[in-house]
Amino acid sequence: MLETSQKTFIGNIIRLHPNDNIVVARTDISIGTKIPSENMTSRSQVLAGYKIAARKIAKGEPILKYSVTIGFANTDIEPGTMVHSHNTEFREFDRDYAYASEFKPVEMVPEAERATFQGYVRPNGQVGTRNFIGILSTVNCSATVVKKVAEWFTPERLAEFPNVDGVVSFSHALGCGMEMSGEPMNLLRRTMAGYARHANLAGALIIGLGCERNQLKGLLEQEELEGLPNLKTFVMQESGGTTKTIAAAIEAVRAMLPEANKARRSTVSASHLSVGLQCGGSDGFSSITANPALGAAIDILARHGGTGILSETPEIYGVEHTLTRRAATKEIGEKLIERIRWWKDVYSVGRDVQINGTVSPGNQVGGLANIFEKSLGSSMKGGTGPMMEVYKYAEPVTTKGFVFMDTPGYDPVSATGQIAGGANLIAFTTGRGSMFGSKPAPCVKLATNTPMFSRLQDDMDINCGEIMDGTVTVQEMGQRIFELFLRTASGEPSKSELLGLGDHEFVPWQIGILG
Image 1 (cartoon, rainbow, N blue to C red):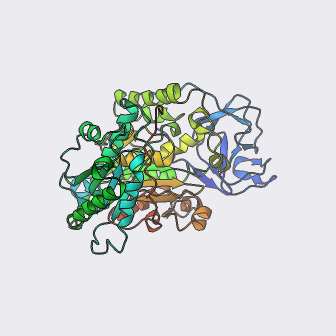
Image 2: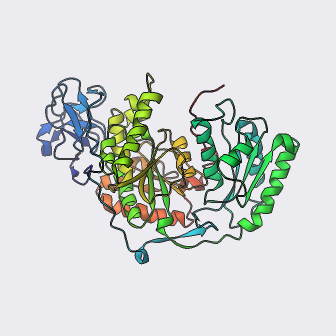
Image 3: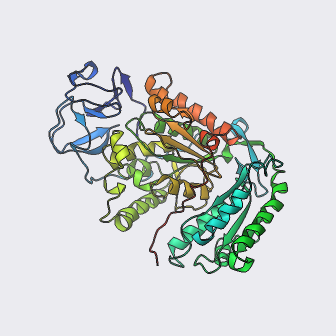
């Protein structure tokens, strides 16, 4: 199991593990600055969040962070020298998956003692954290129509329905010019079905054009949506075109609103909370503050019977062995490695993508040398508990505890898959400052450092930089985050909701060919 509790804050540096040959700059460090705890002097100008060699690292030697290999020295590195992409080589190395060797069952909180929140209990037993009506397009050709329908329902027109959070459209660029069968179409359809069934929707409309490859009839049959209560469908070519379809869809939503407005929140167990875990605009502090603190919150949630969904497969690459060891069974661990191999062998060959080493410019500026180092932090969002299942993109998540869903590393696409799988809340850590928001599941954003939190307070929900400031521990921040989950799930608006974000972040994963 990845050990993250041994970090120590000493003056201007952070030592993450006794075995590490690097330390992390806690603040900006000038050339010639003495670092007494490591018995060395800085040879470089080092920005906060960047790494410093704590001893001489020979060429070819592994660079260790949290006692995990994040790369190899491409030259001899003297103590006190900044360690980053310029002197770190990315190359493959053997990793022992040791399937299920570190599995430990979760010590559950007794049901009578579990935390609660105020949620919407649906007729099928699912629990929502919001109460929207959603409108989905089968194809990009009906995207304008679903947007026009949603736009008609202004706050003024919804004023008499105070228990409805809004009418939101979910349009996309797919549905035609793609294979009619196989995984690309299956993926799109199960994504749409996951939204249509989502516990945060009181009702849904699906609007198609009529001649697209993603035929409405095929979608309904394949995903068993026929007869779903509070689901209405329209085909533009059969409904009289754009204007008439918009008018008919508006009337259909208006007919749904009175029933949707009858929904009331009631006290439910935290076991009904399913949180999609995201990170974006990561920095050198992500693995020290926000990500392990979010992981601590997920450990708490799992003990209360809830679910945490870790995703972004390219961003666990290099540390996947720390997850397979925690798998509940060998078969679950093998599912994760099968997904990793798919990405490496099928989707990434010869392409300039993250899983092949290079992270985004923002991540590099934030102090992350390569994908191994980013993955080290990204994986921490899942906490320290057992990995109970591995899902393909947008598959319904039914297992409780910490689970993994295969998604790309692109945040809107990844979160879309998690929400389709049933996540009724998104938790998003960021070091550089992401402005993400989502619907119908609210998104809370966790800042890794105090300067960024102070600069972007309109977008950030909680400041995990307090861990770096020394005012709270990781575990204390994890408890704060868990309590934020409960408040947000009970209706407290997140910062992204106050800003109106989430209307354009429905982005199903586009795989396969066009034509």
